[in-house]
Length: 171
Image (cartoon, rainbow, N blue to C red; front, side, top):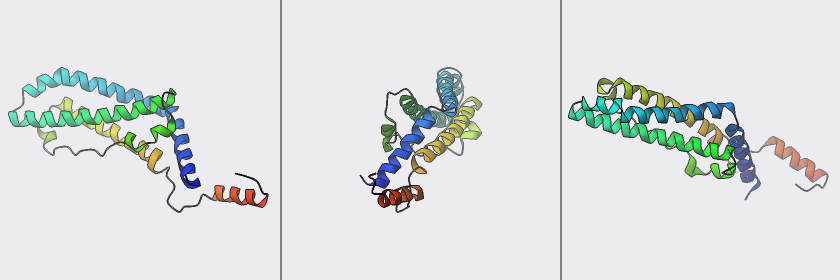
């Protein structure tokens, strides 16, 4: 493993640990899990009733959007649970950096959704989209922005290497 790759991994591990122990993570985790519970309650209760009042075509749109909603929320919950596992010591931060734990791109919603879907579902869709965007931004900052550019030289590491060479010290 090259030194720049090792530095990149160490930097990401540090960022993951810091985030997992932050108040921001606490708030985001609580919000995400509460939204998952609220959505389950809606889809099993009022949402079921609301969907029965729709035309066949609109009920299909409702079904598609509710599937998109639950998929998005499961991605959010999975991402948050990985961060919590790091926080609680059940998972190494370096493992959490694996690509398989990144968020997938959002599927676009139907343009007709706002015209025909019940307000309860529209509200959940909107809130889940906003939460997803915030978590996606965090994910990008933690795992993509933390990656040094190929060929980029870290000036601090460069200076340390010069000092070590000048004084015959080992890294």
